[in-house]
Amino acid sequence: MPTTLKKYNYSFAYCESLKTVTFPEGLTIIDDYAFYGATSIENVIIPKSVTMIGGSSFFGCESLISAQFLALDGWKVLNTSISSEDLKNPTFAAQLLTEYNYKYVWTRE
Image (cartoon, rainbow, N blue to C red; front, side, top):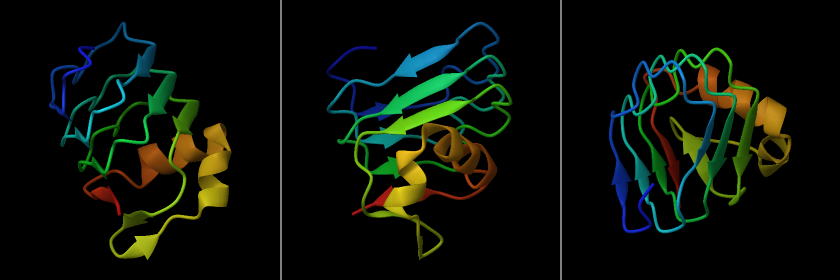
């Protein structure tokens, strides 16, 4: 993806061949429905620059087994903090991202 990108929209929704997503540092927003229903995604790497993951961005990504967050602290969903310990484990982070991203926006201060 271009390194100048600041916001990522729904361009890969329902993509069935994408396996790994590495976002560029500098990206700040993964918008609503960005990868909605992209059933083949197995791995994502979220850079430190991302401060928002829109609702349903990864909903339906049933093959997602690893989500690596390069910034572990400060994430919230519905005013509830997400433990940095939970995000340290890429497998558990992937589970959180697919289950708690449905409808809900993730933000990081």
